Length: 486
Image 1 (cartoon, rainbow, N blue to C red):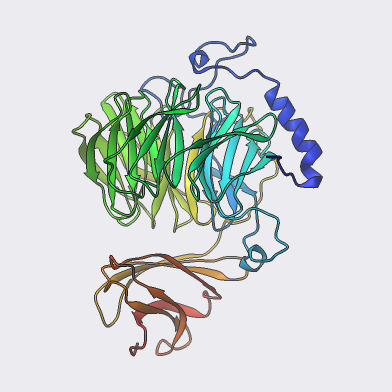
Image 2 (image 1 turned 180 degrees about the horizontal axis):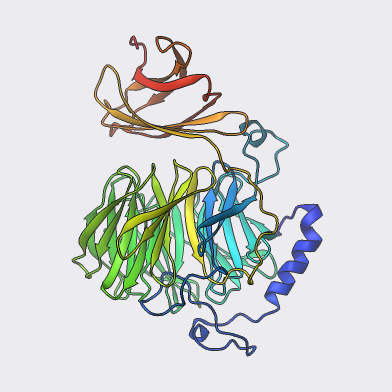
């Protein structure tokens, strides 16, 4: 499969990628030794074991994938400064729907190389995998894969990207140097994410349309185990512990998290973590080994002490905004960074006090977040950054449903041209039809219908979207059964 480039960028991108690939890739065994070329050791990437990594550095970067503004936000963790965004597409809805549109849409997933030199960005709607040089923020290669890719990661040797093609049933193996898809590893339907074991020998793939965690031998690209009996059939995210012993796979629909023995390929336990459980990750400190899990429906990040089949809930950290989603620790295990999807923000958590110590404002609709150690040379990393998606107005409302049971959460994101209204609801009459109304700012007695939504058989509405000019026109939102007086 040939790669496609933007014509004006092709020459520069090819030269930049050639320079990056000129340094030989190294095996995971060389992480704490010199490279094959005699250079410095590879950085230790999070999640990492306690005592394994140096302190947070200004050469490190945090990235968020912002699906509403179609950007990647870039953060310096040493200063908690949002440096800017890398625009990969347009944020105007009219442009996105145009038959002439050629940018990326639904910037969603993130991965990186273990040397910190490359960031891969998964764009779900345009079926794209974008490779970014972290030192320059420049796109150096773009791959196009199958339908609706979700998450992908660069292989331990730095030569391939393994991408879960969620809209189909395979993992695409992309060769970075040639720009070609070199293999397809068939999986269960709806593969969601690929994570590699710390030693680089195995890859684990969870699924959104199957009760399965596939285990793949990296060298042969063959499935060596298929673990079933997970919490449900909608595992949207997973993470592997830094000691390689456990995979935690979350199930957004059931609100549960499955803890898997990654060495013996069996389910250890299933935890009831809460509504819209999103992403897990790991922290190791002098007091023990912990798992952090974001719960979007509760606006909380949960902290568990790992103990094999018997993890214990230590605390619930209340996040500062709506829908905590992706999270990643610093390699020194002193901080955890949590992106808030419906608040356009990142919470910085101190792992000693387990409290939010800072909140940073990022691009809109962020899903994934990664921390990349040693991503840029000292004093570099500011090229090509913009303010697209930043400094937008956000409103989050908890709205009772009039005339029947149920509760709704409404998020309004200021956008370029039209504002985005995002409705999520629960405990509604199954299959019932509802209308979402805007309450006029000029006269609260007047409501205007904005969209209709239908409850699922379990009485939920998951992220129903409408686009209109909201701010300055409406003051709030009302939801009621369609046809009934408001």
